[in-house]
Image (cartoon, rainbow, N blue to C red; front, side, top):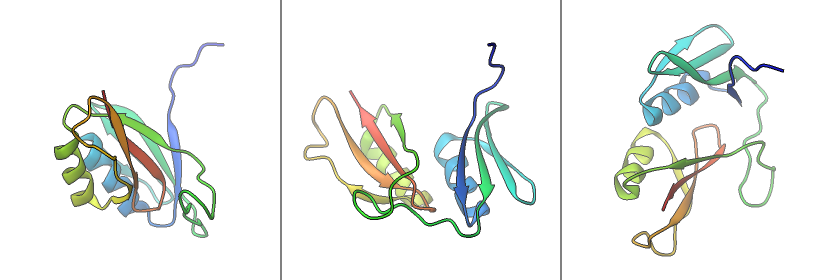
Length: 120
């Protein structure tokens, strides 16, 4: 099997909020259709978002289970943290020591999907 493109797709009730968040976080652009948005980075499709009007956000760590999560490795976790929050992320679990050589913090995107900012 030869895979020609790989794209992770998120369900979301509010496509503009969800796709704008990820475009901002990844430094990409949004191509919006009625019930589908694509975020491209450097002209290449990276993430897809499909309209799911009845989407129930996950409640991490308990409650509605997560459907997916992304680990994003960053060079400067402090600045990445501020940028993620300014785009609409919510911090779910802070690291015990943000100055340690490696670690992660858990966030939720605007639709409630968990993701981690990781370093090390």
